[in-house]
Amino acid sequence: MLAPDPRFDEIDGMEGHEFEAAVADLLRLRGFDQIVRNRGFDKGADIVAVRNGVRTAVQTKRWGTPVNLKAVRQLVDGVKRYGCARGLLVTNHYLTPPAIECAEEWGIEVWDRRELADWLPGEPPVLDTTVCAECGRPVTPGVTEWCLDHRAWYGGFVYCRRHQYASQRRAG
Ligand SMILES: [Zn+2]
Image (cartoon, rainbow, N blue to C red; front, side):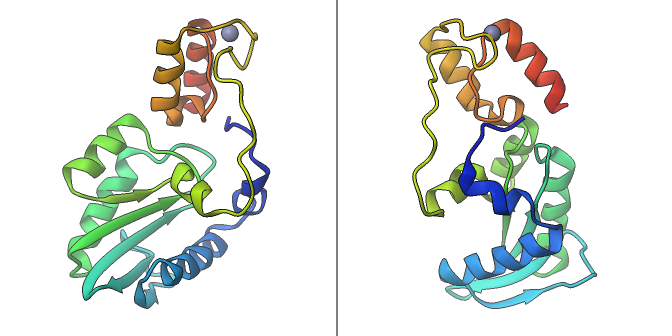
């Protein structure tokens, strides 16, 4: 479950191909040109885009679950398959810890929910990060930090240890 954020209502409700189109627009805004969508032939990259002469393979994931290691590996393959120098993963969700690790290892750039939130108009909803989102009990700063560092499991919420376990199981 993801922390509620009305700014994402439209994005979270998109079909995969709609999200892909929205990302293509975003790439244009972020200085990419020659944006080509690999319609229907998704082999590890939905889009190939160029910025400052550098070819980038872009994979878009409008998912209701965290982006996993497999998806990042597919993009690593996509970078080679499409003769690109770089890879970029764009998702409305977060990446699991192994997926983050793999992305870092292969130099894959990631625009996740946090990144996208920065570019959306409007203010983020205020979330009290000093208490558990499930039971309301106060948590230590260490627990808050842990939860916000592991958004794939906790969706941007902060949970006490007991409810961390429940949330992690829901995230899979
Ligand atoms: Zn709790």
